[in-house]
Length: 156
Length: 162
Image (tube, rainbow over all chains, first blue to last red; front, side, top):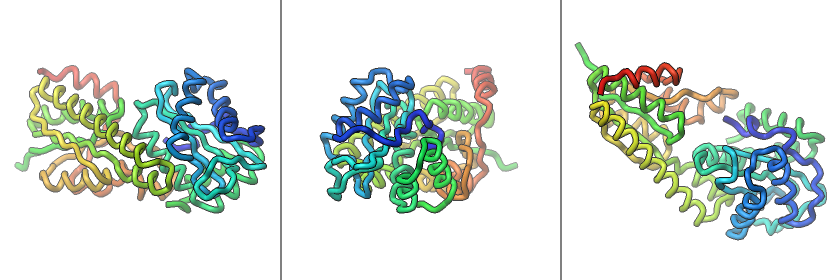
């Protein structure tokens, strides 16, 4: 299974309203809860925030990957949010974050979770991938870009 | 006539790998072969996630422990299942790059037949080179059985006399 198998257009927010890290996490998590991937929204958000308290998942290059392994996720879930203004995630490079991929997985999906998280991190190391995500207009376009890079052999 | 004496099975700990385990036990019983059950804690992904700073140290340690626990459970389960079917089974819990460890043990134990779970759909040439299942399949020094049709496997396993 690949990232594009799990990310649906309903799980993509192209213009986040959030202005803070917590608001952004809540907003990006919300589309997953609305679509039934999460059994307990507040627990899920708290688990994500608890992980953030260990260290920011703002990994630089304007990207953050907040994540958690928690019982309240049905299988594996991923959503995407883009902020035009950028959000202070206390990222490693100090820059504001524009691209947020939020991931959650049930502990029973540990191997899949680690594999997809590693795969996403590899994709996001690619400058052109990030550039294309920043200029995508719709959720469908985001998914198409991911599919293209998954199939391209450009990364890794 | 050369006999199949040693069979190995590579397990991922997923629900699907239970079917792989059952077919490996079935083959071992039918061929009167010894079974080696292998689980590899994939620490490459963990290292990558640490390197890219998606994981913090404490998180990686916790995940590695959980992967190891998952492996221990998967191996204990297959050991019990094999015992019930009176199949000799040795379990191996390893850590490293999955395909390298599996291929290495296959050579070390002179495995005649390697059993693996169904391969995932390939969408790019890259996956042929980097997917662990594909690499085991391609780099194995012995013939490889790719388990399919779970219903059939369940039925064969049930019919095995204990």
